[in-house]
Amino acid sequence: MSSLFERAKYDAFQGDYLTRLLYLNISVFLLFALTNAFTSLFTGNFGLIPNLADDLLALPSDPLRLLLRPWTILTYMFTHFGFRHILFNMIVLYFSGKILMEYLGEKRMLALYIYGGIGGGLLYIILYNLSPVLGQGSMVGASAGCIAVLVAGALYMPQMPVRLWGIFEIKYWMLAAGIVTLDVLNLTGSNAGGHIAHLGGAIVAFFFIRSMRQGHEWNVYLFQIIDAVRNMLFRPKSKKKRRGFSFGESSYVKYEEVKKPKGSSSKSSQDTAKMDAILDKIKEKGYDSLSKEEKAYLFKISNEE
Image (cartoon, rainbow, N blue to C red; front, side, top):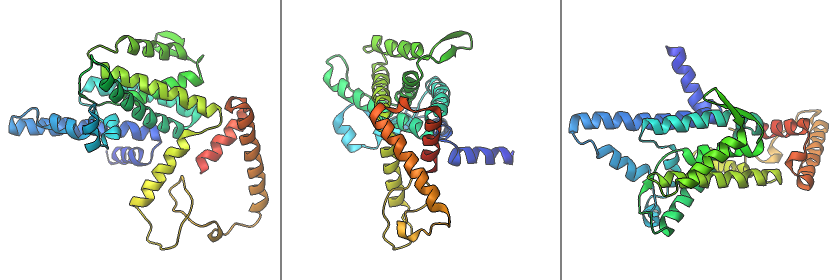
């Protein structure tokens, strides 16, 4: 039992980004469900916790309320109030995230989830304030980020075969196109906000993959922000001035403070030359022009940063 707990603890805090996203979403849902159950049992008020969670975590369509709760543009994409809601989203996230990580890496997968959630939330707010048939409300759920991950995979590997319910085999692009089509057809339905968010996530995925093929990596900006926030909240005790961004666990250090090991200069110059050649090729011909070896080398270097 202790080994199972240690394994879960390791996966939740040190596993890949997909595993951590799954744990975070499930943990928030369980915390909400258990808190609501015990509160309702002892107070008889069945709406206390849902109303409180909706105020603190859900994304409001009213821009004025959003200004008072700016954090909800992030918290809403990790919050679920219904079991079927989180079950569907986590299934989509798990399978589409696994495929995307295998081909594009976990950093791009995480960036797509975050950017897709933000894009879906912003489109939801915009359309709810422009449309005369949609009223004000609030929204929760990871579906915008999940759809962004799924659509990105379909755009990058459109001909990949996927099985629905383990029976029907279709192309990946067909699955993504079917979901997007259903969202368009249900824009004025009972769950209009959710379908609008799906479309926002799909739009983000389109531009993400397009930019990546042109040599522009959006995930770099996300991890720069993450590193900046991490170092602001957990600033090291050393008073030395530090410069640059780091994508790993280590703190920032000056280049001059790092003593290079003997014999590493030639290898470093070779790596730099090879990386420059790959980046020039991406700039001239796009990401898809790279060979499998070049893509593997680029992925290896990005994970070492």
